[in-house]
Image 1: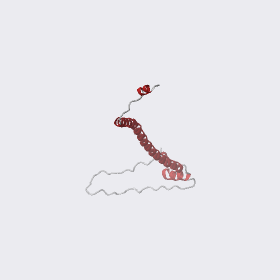
Image 2: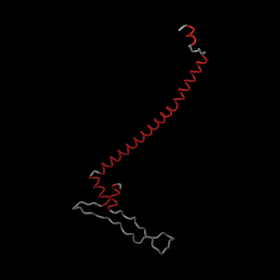
Image 3: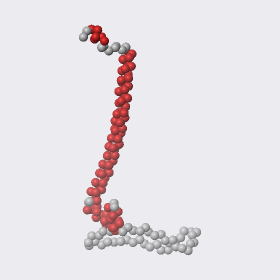
Image 4: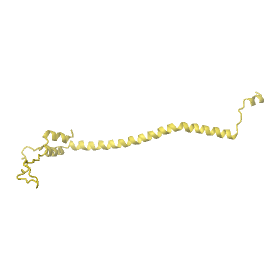
Length: 138
């Protein structure tokens, strides 16, 4: 190749202003392309943080449940609850039931001369099976 042919294939030289503009355009394009992945990265970091907090709470709940399971499997605790809830007695023990005194001659409030007697009924007692099921959490 001759020198004249080499000159023909040379790229034209641009001024410093055109180079700065091209550089700014390239940097703008690169930064515009980086916006979406950056948003996704930040969203993923927020999800990771929320999930790790949820995991921590779940681990605490599991720990509390494990402690409750250990307590419920303890024979002394089971006996204590059975005695309190359903009145369990061992062979040879004597069970005492203390009944409340009946309310005799209850005075009515002044000014109320109603001929009808007002009786308050006690809430129904739970049965032995229902009390035991409540104790188990069922």
